[in-house]
Length: 191
Image 1: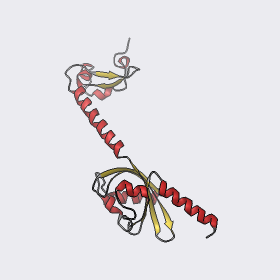
Image 2 (image 1 turned 30 degrees about the horizontal axis):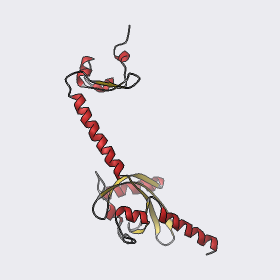
Image 3 (image 1 turned 135 degrees about the horizontal axis):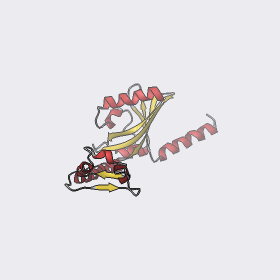
Image 4 (image 1 turned 45 degrees about the vertical axis):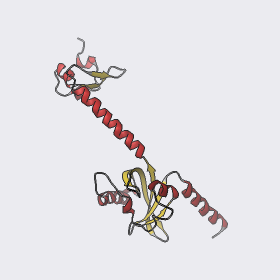
C-alpha cells in the first residue's frame, strides 16, 4: 500500500469515527454486524465493539409490522433500487424505543461479501412532537365538531380551513369536508 492510499484510508476512518450520524455495517449473508461507528454505539447505548458479531435483529422494534416483514421490505427495495430509506422504530440496549431515519445501501466488501451500510439519524424527539401535535389536533377537531353552534375557521384569503357539522348542515351539506378550501362566495355566489 502506498502512502497516498494509506492516507486515504486514514481520512475515511476519521470521517466515520466523527460523523454525527450512526453508521452500521451488516453482512447480508447472515445479518451479523461487522462495524458500528462511535456515534451508533452511543446512540444505541452499547460499549465500543460490543455490537460486533451480533445479529442486527437485536436493534429491531418495528411498529405495526414484524421485524421479519420490515427486513423483507428493506431487502426487496434494495434489490430493485439499490437504496432503501425510511423511518423505523428501533430499540436501545436498555429497551428504550428509538425512532431513526435510516438510509441503507449495499456494497461488496473484499472480506465480508455483500454488506449493508446503514446511516442512522435519531428522530425520536421529532416523532414525539409529531405525536403530540396529532393529539392536540384531534382534541381541537373533537371540540369543533361537537359544538352545537356554527363554528368555522378561515385563512387570510377567506377559505375555510375547518367547519363543524352544524355549519355544514346550515349550508345543506352532510359532510363538512366539502366546504374546506372554499370561500363564502363559493357557497353563496352573488347573482
